[in-house]
Length: 149
Length: 138
Image 1 (cartoon, one colour):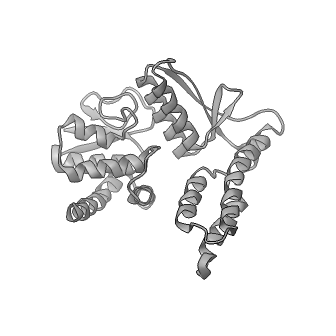
Image 2 (tube, one colour):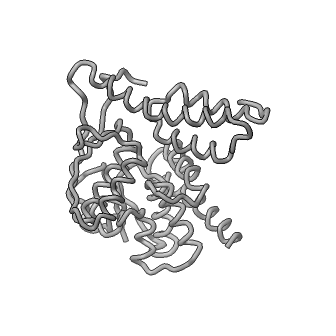
Image 3 (tube, rainbow over the protein chains, first blue to last red):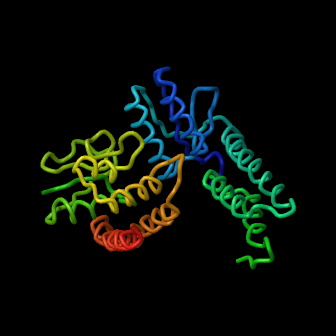
């Protein structure tokens, strides 16, 4: 992974009519699903990759169709250390979810099918390749005495 | 006729090009412009570019839009549209386990192809195969 200060971010700022609330909720759920981080109740942030750029781009189009307005930027943080903090926030969030999976895995007779689906969902938002994610994957593969690869 | 899209094609555009050649315009000629490039060539129909007619609408992929715009009601094509929707966009409901794999294969296909033209040509085989298998299951 690149150095945090070198991380390029995509930023989405939007407003959308209050009604219908379903439209607002739809956009909000998609942002959560992408694993975007909301800063100061104003700016949604993701690390910039061709994939995240494209997802934000289509979301901006969708917001326009729902009667809203969206602006999409790509930028770097200039203040010392802020990029690291942001990366940590992204990691902390997936790590909490990974911890939950690990906890469930230690229960008796864990539901491996459900837990592997959950792993895939968390992994899709694991933009900085958390070490804990690797552990969860290993544990899932070893579960029931399977062979890890 | 000519069709234009942005460079670096992926799962949705490969599906669209396959659909165009197979169902709409067998002699289709595809042009590629850099992302964000303007103006678009006037003599070509743009697709999968934000804001154009044949693009993402209401959270659906361009392939889905094309089925609607051209009144294609084949249930196998509709099923492919669902797969591409899940492969290319964030969906709350995910019903097609093939979606993530298809996305990965199409991205890889672009990597191993010298240019977008060749990637679209190779992509046709993937969608012919997908159509054939989903047709068997239908």
